[in-house]
Length: 65
Length: 217
Ligand code: HEM
Ligand code: SF4
Image 1 (cartoon, rainbow over the protein chains, first blue to last red):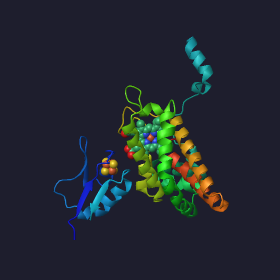
Image 2 (image 1 turned 180 degrees about the horizontal axis):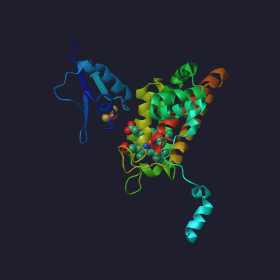
Image 3 (image 1 turned 135 degrees about the vertical axis):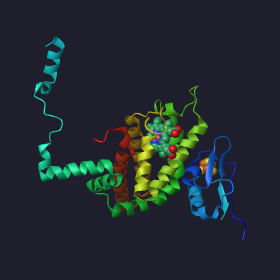
């Protein structure tokens, strides 16, 4: 099985919606945009990440979970 | 009495009447029917779910309407991008007043900002389409309304209520024209869907504006 991973593609418009929908795992950094919280185990937050991806206006949240 | 206070008393004659002390019990509350109404007033002011439930029964928004909203999902989903593009890239940025909030300091349309606003509007619509009328959803609707007044978050933002109503009205008719177009051959489905959305719009508009007014609204 592939290692679980989440990434944000370039088309991101920095709307911060993902960080609001999945605040437990995604943080929004003003200068660079969304990122996964450092050192966090993402698996327990899979559902939240998928939900955030659903609301992403650019469909740029990608994952293997 | 001065001329001014005389004039005032003429304008507001009730002010000249003997005042009842503030602590006096309102005798209306002794009448059970009025007591019931008072309890409803108080409960719907304090509890967002009670407010929703009360409004829902008033406009007769039932499970059948929820089913009809779900039936309309496919039509909205297939047209979501077009709806949002129209509202944001045509309506809002071209209107002489509405566009004021989407311009940079030089008066030019701030494209990146418009994109972000559009994304947030999309999330709002998607949340409505989930049809989960629970406390989390209604608090979200209330919060979206509240960000338009200097009460929470954007202290320097104030969107006059007539603009909200104008935009709600515009979105309402735009959606209904879309439904009418898509359901030309199924008038019964069109009736179900437009009836359900009309009811839902009124309830949402009420909750959205909670923070525009004092609780007596
Ligand atoms: C149909 C009525 C309206 C709806 C449904 C609506 C929806 C929204 C939503 C969903 C948000 C964002 C909340 C969030 O951060 O996710 C928002 C914020 C905002 N809306 Fe509206 N809105 C309406 C009317 C208006 C009008 C009439 C204007 C002015 C022309 C306006 C200007 C703004 C602005 C400037 C913000 C930004 C606040 C910020 O930058 O944080 N809205 N609105
Ligand atoms: S929701 Fe999508 S577009 Fe918005 S900040 Fe997150 S990744 Fe970027």
